[in-house]
Length: 516
Image 1 (cartoon, rainbow, N blue to C red):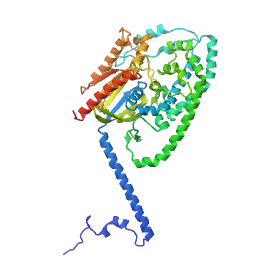
Image 2: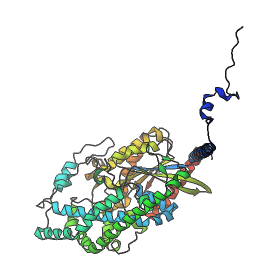
Image 3: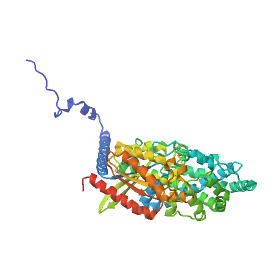
Image 4: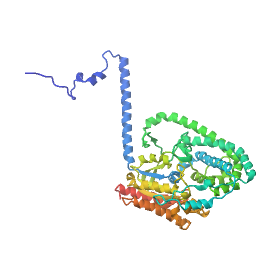
């Protein structure tokens, strides 16, 4: 009869056969000092292990709760008003945060003055001789433009064909003198741009590719709208960070923030001093008749915010200037990537955490939206209807309204967003009224507009019909489209609209959660 030994069991108390126990067993020659040191190491290792377990447990709980949060995406092309809408949300639901970061907006506002000053000078210096008006030729050319798939034409910008002469040598002399006196302000533009962008150059953002926002508020103040999240490097989504790791880095981060704040203060004080000294020259440049003539003939194209700050240069250039809420709403800087803002909102006695995502709208940045589609609760799509006479910086052949329609079609047809609540803001209606009042004709840039009245109501109805048609053709789930005519710089009107949008999103949220 053959006898065999019993194989070792995991429940066996005999540790001699366990290689792991043998490996961990202290040596027989261990001294008392070595034993104490070993026990201390084991205690520290267990403490670290328990801490990690607690962080994992806390992260799981946060992840579980975050599934009940509302995630609102602000989508649209660049300069459509997304960041201004985010400011309006902040003004309504976290006004103290806006007050705390108010001073940081001086950097943006000073940049919003320096840039148009440079562009005005460049335009005055490069106008050609002669005063031939090519309006008739451009009108004839527009009549034969083909339609795009959405029914809107891709009109070429014929403004470069127009020529405009300076008013003799006296204007050239005046411009040269103004450039010399404004040279300190022009030199400050690069420093302001560097401060705002953090030295990041973004491709695919058109002519404003360098001047983008990359967490500039949090860098200067260590504060963001709502509660900030630390982001992972992959996919752009946020990750929850344990308290211990934050505490360990707290001193270093605080020191860096103080250094950055000191540098920021020095730069801003220098620019404020320069602007105070040359505000008269800025006003003189802005009021030159040649500047108005260039703008009327579309040889000088300035950003929409330029008029606001150039008209208020005396107030903005005052020593000790603090931006008003109206100034902050009109201030512009391109968004890079996706900025997340988290805040708690009470609706009908129920407090829910909202995640508002403000995205960069330039063509080269739209790919960064995709990771946020799968769990989006709602979308506000911003379409600037005043941009019917403008073209993409990234591709001057494409009309901006047509680009908005094409982008809206992609959003409506995206399967990841088929359950998201959909809101459309036909934005910048105030600028649309102003353009129509000056006689700018829609059918010159959008041939399919035809002989319709060149009046506000008719133009708005035309654009609304096109966007509604795009939604109807890409609406497999019979999703309702909520449309609003907006001017996001109008705080009083926006408070009412945001409240309506908030309530409609919240009702949809409750229905999806099977609570009503």
